[in-house]
Amino acid sequence: MKPLFDSAWRAAAYCVHPVVIFLSLLPLVLMVALAFGLGYFFWEPAIDAVLGAIRSWELLAALSQWLDGIGMSGAKLVLAPMIVVFLSLPVLVVLSLLSVALLMAPAMLKLVARRRFAALEQRRGGSFAGSLFVSLSATAIALVALVVSIPFWLIPPVVLVVPPLIWGWLTYRVMSYDMLADHATKEERRELVRRHRPMLLLIGIVTGYLGAAPSLLWVSGAMFLFLAPVLVPLAIWIYTLVFAFSALWFAHYSLSALQTMRAETAAPDLPATPAIDAPAPMLPLPPL
Image (cartoon, rainbow, N blue to C red; front, side, top):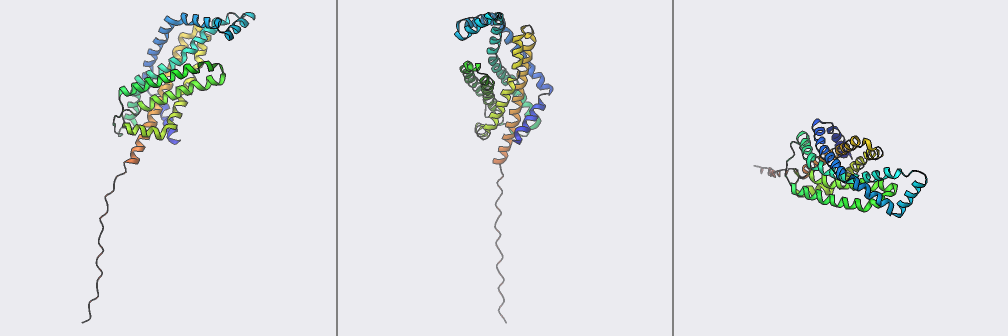
């Protein structure tokens, strides 16, 4: 557990580095543009679709009638935006992870390698195509898992457990490849992941739960829609910093584990000590 905590505090210290803070603004600009672009073109159709679903689904229709009966028909106008924002959250989280992986992770990996692992040889067992394939395939699996689990989110414990676990698994899959692509061979990467899979997965899950913390800002943005232009960018930036911390954590842990593994397997072969023949015993001289 010591390498886990050691890499965690190092990652947290790197998060206040000016380079990391500057890099965190690049995905923020892209994600804000994407969020507001999607909102501009699809906000009203999404609200109408949710209101139609509320009227058509039997359970939600009963809820709508109950709200009308107690004089809170206007609550439906707040409920629909909340549902739209809540459903868009996983998509934006996944896109934030991909933007960090593509824009920030390589730069932060170079920062960690230059400052702490300058003597670690780069054997380049990965490639950009491999990183892209791992990212896209893992993202597709994560999105399918999120969509399948959405009906169960109405159960309070499920919504607090399942999405962070899915995000954590996705983080583990993407980062465990990207952080070792330059320095490890394919065989070294596979062996390292095999040895340290529980710790790597734990890092992903922890950062997945950290990524769920800014959800409060999304809820606030849905409840106070007039604050959405401030709360939405703030939430996206927090997500970006969380994933930046995740990339730094994976970088410190993975490169340290790779360095240790190479030290274990590269024990020098000591030259064999040549045997020294013992001198022949001195025989006593015969008496004269």
